[in-house]
Image (cartoon, rainbow, N blue to C red; front, side):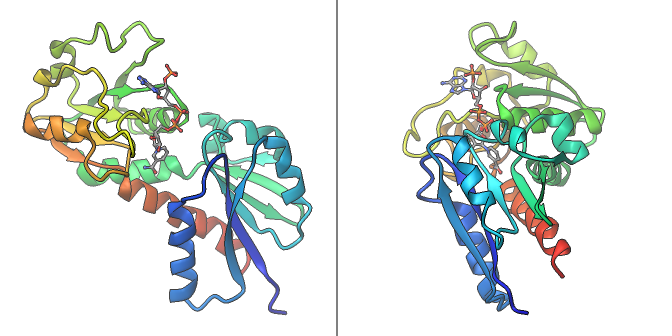
Length: 245
Ligand code: NAP
């Protein structure tokens, strides 16, 4: 009757995890003794097959570097995950594995909380998995954007202050500046920023990246990735929990 419900996080080199603490606190607060949340550090994605053989596994989160690689192991994708091409949450129901992308939900909540009506064009810095979720949300909300990355036409060498002036939403989607490399910062024409700008850095550790500090100095409204992180976890919980009531 009171069967175990196992959840967790797959990734590589993930000994510390926000998600583990977040869900363990939640289980304790809600007195959900039958739930557990574990870290599954996988050297290779193939190792996920062993996890799938556990009948108590209700689902798991997925982090770097497996958000795209996990797709080959799933039976179904949500509409969003399919369009984004990345999965950060898996639900297992009667042996059927469905992939979701709750990063998009978390980012949309963050954007909508802070965006002003005049902010209608964006620069996305980076072109990895998180950037894809960001692109999806901007498309959905009819916000036009340009991608800036090391491999795109507009890159960190040729991005001008004028371009920054023209795009009043800046979304930092690279890991540059993450703990412990907190002094690192993208090469970016901060002089193009003003009080008209919203700058969202998806990094949540440290709270204030060098990028955020430089942007705030120019008067931009700045936001870090913490609320997005919390919201993607809440959405994952909704997906898992609604299935097992
Ligand atoms: P990813 O798939 O590995 O992509 C990283 C991107 O950053 C790539 O476009 C890469 O460029 C670029 N990049 C890496 N190092 C760079 C450098 N030194 N200079 C310029 N560009 C560089 O990673 P991801 O999953 O998108 O995650 C990106 C960041 O978002 C991470 O810090 C992650 O923690 C954060 N994130 C936060 C949340 C949240 O809930 N707040 C959710 C998801 C991700 P190349 O293509 O040129 O290599």
